[in-house]
Length: 59
Image (cartoon, rainbow, N blue to C red; front, side, top):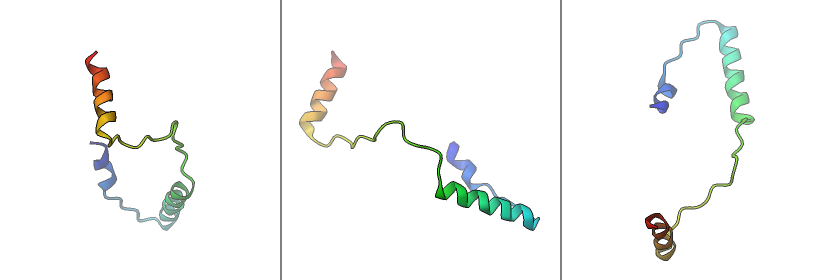
């Protein structure tokens, strides 16, 4: 599973490498490169809208 990799133990003994790692983590958090390609639609909660959507699948 993809989320298991975030729980890996990291051991850094060199202070310079530790500083580089922290800088990279801060840069990643402050300026993420990923931009959503399309807006996220809210889930359907209206029962009639859900029925219409499911009716399209049967056709």
